[in-house]
Length: 264
Ligand SMILES: [Cu+2]
Image (cartoon, protein in one colour):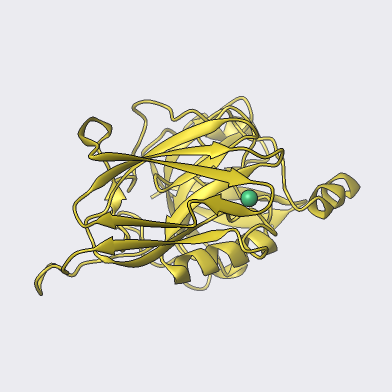
C-alpha cells in the first residue's frame, strides 16, 4: 500500500497489467488481433472506430510531462477517418483519450477515485515514455469534442485539448447515440449488486478479465470496459471471450475484482 501511495504522489501511475491493449497500463499494449467481441465498433457521440485501411489523414500528437498536448486543438471534417500517431515525449506515462467534455470529466473523476483502473477502448491510446501508439477513429458526427490524458492528476493539471468536427448533423431519425453503453448492456440487476458484462479478453496466467460492463451500482461506476482480477484463475476455465456474464464487482486492495461470475 505504501508503494501505491508513493506512486500516487508521483501523480503518474505505472501499473502492471496483462500484456494487451490497456489504457492506464504500462506494459506491452499492442492491440491483439481478432479477439474483439462486444462493442469495440460502437457508435459514440464523437464517432466510431475507423478502418485502418481507409484512413483519410494522419495527425501527429505529442504529449509531454508539462501536461500539455501539441497541438492543443484539432479540427477535422465530418466523415474523415484519422490515424492519430500519439507520441509520448515525457518520462511519465500519458494517454490520449477522445470524448465529449462530459465523458472526459466523468472518466477523469473515476481515475482520481480509482487510479488503478485499466481501460480498453478504441478511442484511447496509452503511451509509455518515449514510445508512440496509433489509433484510427472515424468522425461521423459533427460537434465540439475534446481529448485528454486521464491519468490521475494529469487531466486536473490541464492535460486536455479541443477537437472540433465540422459538418452538418444527420437528419432526424438517425439519432441513436448510445454513449457508454455496451452491446445489449442494460442496467445491472437491481437489488443484488450484480453487474452485467461481456468478456472481451482473458489473461489466464494473470487471472484477469477485460469486461465490458454495465452500470456497477455498488461502485457508482457507469458502463465501460475495464480489467478485473479474479481471486482464483481456475474460475476462468469455463469462460471465454464473448461470454455474456453476470458478476459482482468489488474494489479491494486497489484492485477491481470480479466475483460470483456466472454465464447469463
Ligand atoms: Cu498524462
